[in-house]
Amino acid sequence: MAKSKVLVVGGTGYIGKRIVKASLAQGYPTFVLQRREIGLDIDKLQMLLGFKKEGAVLVEASFSDLQSLVNAVKQVDVVICTMSGVHFRSHNLLLQLKLVEAIKEAGNVKRFLPSEFGMDPALMGHALEPGKVTFDEKMVVRKAIEEANIPFTYVSANCFAAYFAGNLSQMGTLLPPKDKVSIYGDGNKKVVFMDEDDVATYTMKTIDDPRTLNKTVYLRPPENILTQRQLVQIWENMIGKQLQKITIPAQDFLASIKGLGYEEQVGVGHFYHIFYEGCLTNFEIGENGEEASQLYPEVKYTRMDEYLKIYL
Image (tube, rainbow, N blue to C red; front, side, top):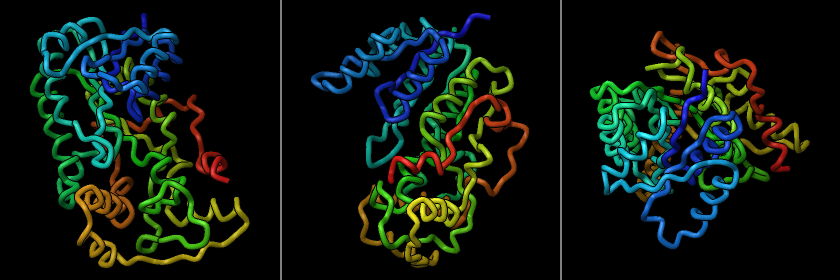
């Protein structure tokens, strides 16, 4: 069976660039949306031209021109959107409604993967404000997809390692602490840490797989399901040193929201759900879901002891 033609929207972004590379590496005919509004953003343009050198096709379109989006999606079988929903970068999740409209009008797309790649928003209806907006907007997009009868796969990728593992899950830094480490609650809630390149690899594996059609795919490779304390211990073993543990009770952590800016409040809320509630692993995957490492045991995913070596 011929591999599907893939259009990546948001291909210069944090996850998007990895999706493009994984698509090319797995031999998919790969198209990348080039937005007309790119202007003088030389870094994005250079990245796009780099993809072109590697064999990707650049497709020009604009979210302010529906017909250009329709023309873009008509060239492919699968559309993957990786627009950022992270408040401290850029937050464009609802722009995807234009993409849904274009896919519906084009009528040829066999599968749409919207920008998810985090916690499952369907399980986050109870989320704290203001971070709840991320999950609410993802659910708005899901509703539009399903009402338009567009075939889909939702990817729940849990915690990106560069944001959650390299810093031992410390807020306000991306580097591991040298002497003291904050532990959230008892530090024993199970968290799933994912190398971002593995997120892209698993995502591409799903697109032509009938087992993942109209389902949520959870990335839960078993050896990367770790508590925060286990993650810290891995690092301590690597550096041959014990870090001072500072335990933060839930009420103190929530109280820290006061006085923070909007983006920081969103981050604190999400951390609370992950490390105090254990929202990534406190449920069983039901009949509408699949687990990626079980579907694709051939993927040699990066364990966190290997991942952390670069920080030594």
